[in-house]
Image (tube, rainbow, N blue to C red; front, side, top):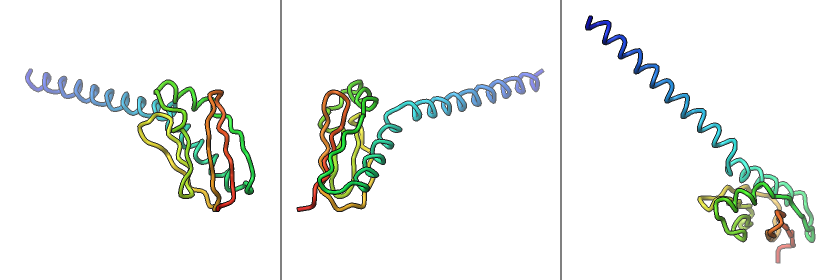
Length: 127
């Protein structure tokens, strides 16, 4: 009887540990797919590509309403959502760390947010 009881406990523990593992795996995938990380990466890469393809004097208006919603929900200051320095674009939607993407053009870049969900990007000649 003791062997059967031990096997039952081992089987239950095996099933429970597998359930916990797969539940945490699905939670991680869900959180990563629907969170600010994905938006930060896509905005940073998109802005970097736009800057690389722009000429000095170009003004770009980018729709970032989805990112603005995430930033407002997490209490992020709008003026800190986007920045560009040292040939890198930084996007921080949560205030817990930013994602950066480098661009190759040697321009001065200013990125300003308005409350309507648009980022205003100005590409200027380096002084």
